[in-house]
Length: 397
Image (cartoon, rainbow, N blue to C red; front, side, top):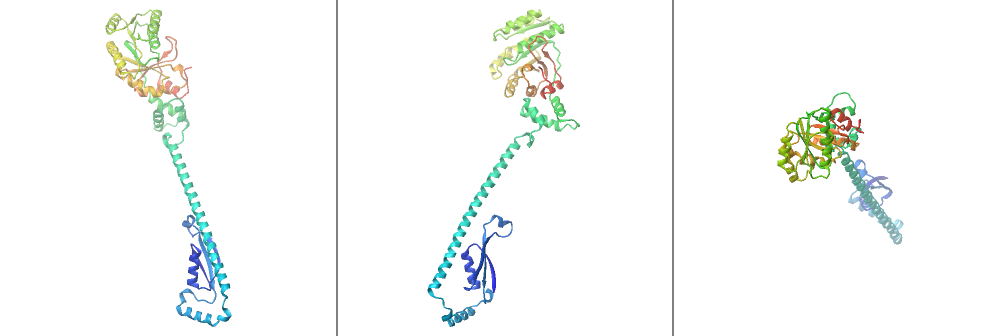
């Protein structure tokens, strides 16, 4: 008996090969669906493994036309005894054809199932790629491409701008001292803070937007100079637009017994300055202007230039939104301010905006104000003190 195994894609292919190689007398012993060997076979469709056998037939390689003729002669000689009735032959043929059709149908179902599996597999691969892309996007959106550290979260929670958070983290990496992350952050922030211990003398001008507390701040400076440093102080205001501003400053001047002038025109500015030539310090309060209005800033500049002072301070509130800080410092640059005074530290619980303001203005910090009391709630702070405020280690109130 000869037994051969065939790996085919369909039963039609199997029947054709079996009849050609083993002859019509071959019998199918078994059939099953398997995958091709190797890694490729795992992702490919299943194939059919058919095992066939034949009795008293030589191998296909030894078959010849002569063997076939002799086999026909023998079959004719035994025709009477071995002849199959036509009806029976037809029945067997029909059964074989039916079996072939069933195998074809099964093969089609198998192909359809394989196609569905391929579609599901492709969909899963697509979803995995989308998830991977989303995760990478989330990771890349974080500074440093990694999960946020505690110190980074702390800086962001204290209203430090994204640009400055990155700057502080970068500076921390260059610090080789064996200290904790908070200490490194404190050192990094201190390096970024420039403070100025100016002498309160000559003509001092305060400029800045409306509502930042310029009038109260100038009153605090006047009290500090007159009452603590015992110098002769004069007050000038050109803030005639805001209701009550003139009377407020006049009240402070009367209490402290210092000269006070209200200026409406350029000529009046000259007269006011001349009248206070004997003062050690002349403080000039200006009108609050929108940093977006270039015409108003230019008008204000004419008055500031008339004062002829190199001691001009930009006054800005600690409560100013980060997105507005840049507009304010840029809008007032044409007034050539030399220092920054940051007010209203008592009206916020986070102090990251101090560093945001100093970084945007690129000017040293001269004073901060911490309340409404005149003249007490104004002081100069060190970089270490400001760093402690920004990191939440200290607070004003």
